[in-house]
Structure formats: C-alpha cells, structure tokens
Amino acid sequence: MKVAIKNIEGKAAGELNLAFEPVEADKGGQAVHDVVVAYMAAQRSGTACTKTMGDVAGSGKKPWRQKGTGRARAGSFASPLWRGGGVVFGPKPRDYTKKVTKKTRQLALRKALTERVNAGDVVVVDEIKLDSPKTRGFVNVLRNLSADNGVLIVAEAANQNLSLASRNIENVEVTSSSNVNTYQLLKYNKVLFTRGAMEALDERLKQD
Image (cartoon, rainbow, N blue to C red; front, side, top):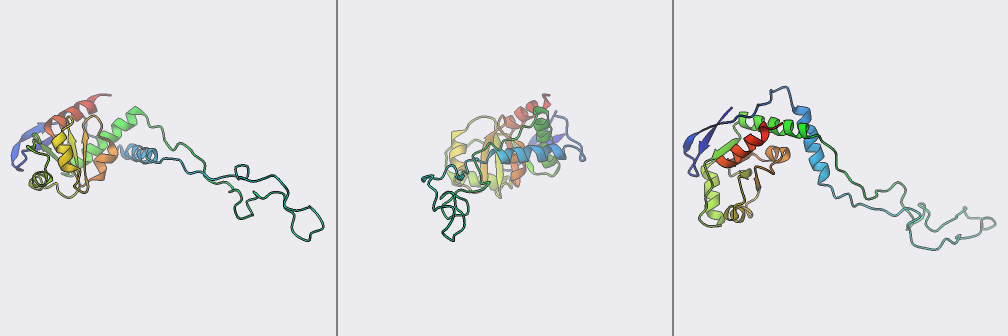
C-alpha cells in the first residue's frame, strides 16, 4: 500500500510504501465496532449514585401505629413511596470498561487505517516544523494540505510548538504514533501524519 508524501506547502514530496497487511473490505468490521464501543464505555466515569432505603438519613421509627388511624400502613420514613425516601433499583458506582483482546485491537487499527487510506483521507507530510507556536501559521499549513475541516494530527514525538499552535483550533487533535487508537482514526475528516509517525505506526501494525 502506497501513500503520497507532501511538504507543508502542499506540494508532492515522494511516496511511502506501507508494509503492514491491509484488511480486506469484508473483514474487520466487528473488531472496529468492539474496540470503539469499549473505548467509549471506558470514557464513562461510572460515578452515578442514588440512595437506597437503607442509605437515607433518618430514624427507624414507625411513622404511626399499625392499626386504628384509618391511614395506610407505613413502616419507615425512608420508604420509596414517600418524598425524600430511597430509590428503587437506582444507579450505583460501577466500572463500565470492557475487555478487548490485543489481536482485536490490532485488527481494528489496521482496518481503520486501511479504510482511511483507501478513501484518500490520510495525508502524510515530510515534517511539521513550526518556527513559532502561533495559531495563524499553523492554520495556513492545514489549508495548504486541505486538512482544515477537522483533522487528527499524528506526530512521531512531542512537539511543543505544534501542541501550542493547534490547541485553540476547533476539531483538531494532536497525538503520537504510539498512542493513536481506532476511535481517533475514525473521528475526524482527515488524518495528518508526519512521515516519521507513519513509519512508526506501520512498524507497530506489523507486529502480531
């Protein structure tokens, strides 16, 4: 699989041969679904909590005697039938994470990258070298690369100027080749790789 390389002016600067095994069109869909569902589930804090009848503050005194008042029987002020009483079957703190095997995550990542490359949504630039952390100059770079309408930027290593220049732009996220995941590859309209980041990810995807 080949991808074109551009410079920050948007001009052709060669080609890069990717060595990872692309995923066929009819395979890998379930793996992508499982990984994305697991990723989104892991973002949930799971801190929702309600008080059951046993958690509600108050005495255990019976509101009134069992018989002779003409009112319905009542045994506790914390009854779920009463205002301020406990909640029946309400949420409690829990862990929403789902287990996904390493091979499934690897397949999903290869599938996502294969589809984005085939769709022409992946842009590889030889390097992103910014002289200053100014947003205006970085916006011009994105426009030159036709990637100014929602883009994931995958860099080989941390770049302070890049991080500072991109943080105020809407729908732009910066990550590294070692941390990029399937959800990120699918979220944005374009995926912008530096050459070093693409080579590092290609090496990562070749490993079983």
